[in-house]
Image (cartoon, rainbow, N blue to C red; front, side):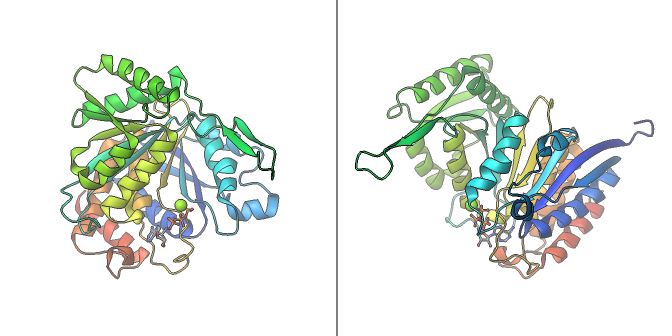
Length: 356
Ligand code: ATP
Ligand code: MG
């Protein structure tokens, strides 16, 4: 801009349960860090989600995707409540957004944090990223059920992998690996899944020809799952199909200690469409309304948003601030501490100022 201030329009869907608590916490931290870096984040709050579903029978308004398209990024809290089937949230909100905006990369950094004790002893420092293909693969509507209720009943579900889809996620993962430790693990199951997985392996291997500096290993998903539990510190970047990536990112998140700290990004890496940033956790109805939710997953997702909007220094500043808060012993209940969501958020804001 003329004044040197960089302005971004962000669509905010706080959603349900603790989404309503961790979202304001993250926005408070983001506003502070943005001000210090000459950024202006223009928040546009949208009250979509389960209440909207109860009132209108849909998670998003009819023109919801067109409204989102007018924004530079989408910041999501948690959508979903126990009395609405998960499939409504997934196919009524998350999947349409991921597909319309070609958010073909689902990025999940997994890192040991100060004060977050991994459930498994002696795993060593974990610092890896799961790159999940987010647009195609096993999450397909092609298929059906026949002979309902009869002994002959069967169900068919087709997985669809395209050369373009596999190639672009493989290239993204390779670029990421090249910027980190240079090691890329590709999750496969080509011994059992005889059409799509050999195709996945082939396209990934071909895409990697352009990245001689990256060491590619293909690992069978079953062995990889076990190995992630036993030797997580060995992994750098993992690329996986939609289903395998979904499972691996939950597994990888679990071995670091708390679901409350895990962030994610649904990226359209070319920036032609808005990307979406959301914590890995759900609406946590068991603790909603108590003011004890850990806002780190939401704050870290906000840092990923700053990074994707082209502000890596602001992103790093925010990450350093919540790490300092954790290292200083301010922790929410899930991490064995006693700080409320707001007390923890104030600690992060204090460190944002200290680190400025
Ligand atoms: P969803 O189907 O929306 O993913 P879920 O029930 O599978 O929901 P979460 O809502 O993430 O998963 O909750 C799982 C457990 O983790 C709950 O016990 C919840 O209280 C806890 N939890 C999740 N997020 C947080 C958080 N930010 N802070 C503290 N505890 C959390
Ligand atoms: Mg869940």
